Amino acid sequence: METIKSCWNFIQNEVLGMAWLNRLIGSLLDSLGIDVSGKLGGSIHFFIYDVIKIMLLLGILIFIVSYIQSYFPPERTKKILSRFHGVGANCIAALLGTVTPFCSCSSIPLFIGFTSAGLPLGVTFSFLISSPMVDLGSLVLLTSIFGWKIAVVYVAVGLIIAIAGGMLIEKLHLEDQVEDFIRNGKAVENSSAEMKLKERALYALNEVWLTIKAVFPSVLVGVGIGAVIHNWIPEKLIVGILGNDNPFGVVLAAAAGIPIYADIFGTIPIAEALLGKGALLGVVLAFMMGVTTLSLPSIIMLRKAVKPKLLAIFIAICTIGIILVGYFFNAVQGFLL
Image (cartoon, rainbow, N blue to C red):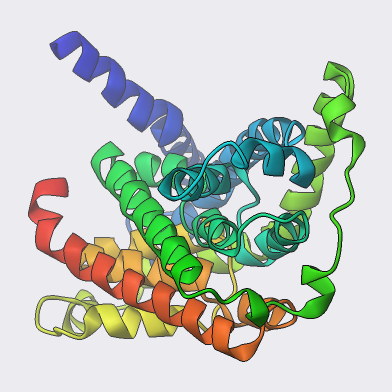
């Protein structure tokens, strides 16, 4: 048992957490005469380490996910999902959302494609909710920073929100709230299912490049904010706003995340810094979910596909789910950390 635990700790700390990279960068900065224990040196250390770590993990994850995605164009996904009914279809759609792009705006075109392909509305919304909230990137990065317990529970509760939200939307029979051009459209089958192995690898490499190019600015901003929080903002201030003394910290954090547009990779460094300064776990995760699931740009894009009533219901489901998840994590923080 101890051997297994040691192996897992090595994987979590040295492989996923890249502690070796942290030590290497610290040694390099020390050799340059930069004091990493000071505020400025600590910020530089935090920034360089997190940017490199995130981009390395991002490249590997995008390649794997894109390779898997090449087997699942909308029409093929429809055929797979059509074999399932009721809760089963929502569960499969939510799980498929975990192997899709890493931000809500890139998930919406896929949602439109699935809806045009004739998938039930509740099923497509289970996918739309889970895609930005609980992708593989969140699982790997959360494991690397917060540990496997938090990562697994985070993904589990995110999938529950996606499944329950999709089922509720299905029960409300809101098909008329989807814009006509989508309901009357037809998804175009592409040839991705016919690709050869080399073509899939090239496709995945291209997706890596396109995704990194798209998310790199938000990663820089997110890590930069995290570095400032980590080394410059007083711990008392963070604890006062987002700690035990503020029962509305979860609500504030979820609301604060909405105006920000970032993917999971740009958000986690901020969450890491907030948690390190004493913010409650549920508050930090509510902020992450608010950013990745309910950002204003994604809501604006989704409005082009659905009518105001359905959009409002989607926002309400996600908001209530995020707040409940936040308070749940606050309650079990002692067990998970």
